[in-house]
Image (tube, rainbow, N blue to C red; front, side):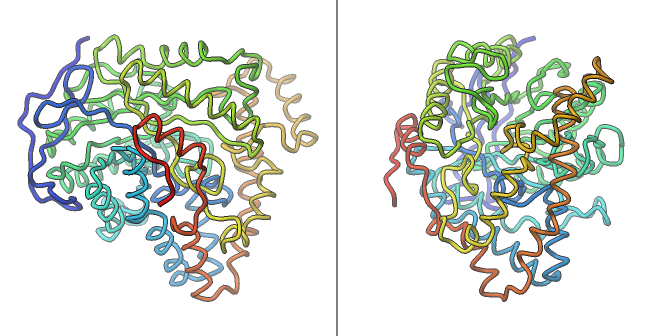
Length: 488
């Protein structure tokens, strides 16, 4: 297969959410093995993911389970009006002009924006677009554009759930999206609408229509991508498509052709950088992980792109930090080694994630702020129980889990549960679904009795002025990007 570059003329205009000077700026496009602007200048997209914002995640803001379950539990305590006040204020405070300015100062030129379909469509009224759901997305795309930063719109949670985990807002371990035409029809309709909405916005670098798909059969995903690409291109022939591979964006064998003006996105988390990761260099779960291991993993994950001559873009990567200075120094070295590898290949990247309660983010709500003071002990309990997949070392509650692991290994020794085997599946079902769901009422009860100013103060804990900065990480990124990490 060979790479195809769009020969269509790029569009301009005054589309929704456009930043200053957007009308004169043509769209980015694929040009050979990279991206280029309207004048043919190469553009390498490097930045961060805005995880936990329009697609909330348990480890990012500290709740258990899934976003939909959490919202339902909190609403049952606060009532719909006060819950709506809190969640809307959180969306407003989580990312503002100050955040865009910080990212611009670092030298980033791209933010990948994960969104949950529930902002734009209701399960009770499928195919009906919720116009109000675009207010914050338009706002942030506009803010980023004003600071010279492109947006990639990433549909992170699809109806029915496109993968087996919490970040697709999946309360089960079944990716039902691949099993029901109804869910697939709704996503095509939603992307047709979104493509029409942003087709004239040059600060939207493109569309990432399915985050980390995981079709266990591998049979539904290829035909669906064919259908979705055709539908989006009929509405918007200009914007770049950023397409994730199957099995959490690691398997590209599902693609039957190289679509025009398309980037095939890999995700490149380092084994030693997970919460359960060992020393670096050193052993993690029986594998020696060093710079050569990182290179071998990247080479494997990008083989399709290099063989097809298409651009390299790492949609997600980044280590988990522990709070231990020695271990975190090793995590920063993992990141340095990965960035050096991406520089060598001129690969673009989007670091996961910009803001959270302390696991990975560049910035986090201050420890003395309203949110951390109120929810800190609960977050510590979740960590003790290993109730979040992303923060779990898989060793928490070992006395309770060990007999279950032994039982499965003894009675079903040949069982390999998609995507990562029986041990992971057992942890997912017990720790990250059963225990997490059991903790939801406790989290929601922490909202009981709060008045309006207290709810707003909780939400405003995520405003940049109320956050602390992970300075070594900011320094590292600024050094790589040629920006500055000095506090504003």
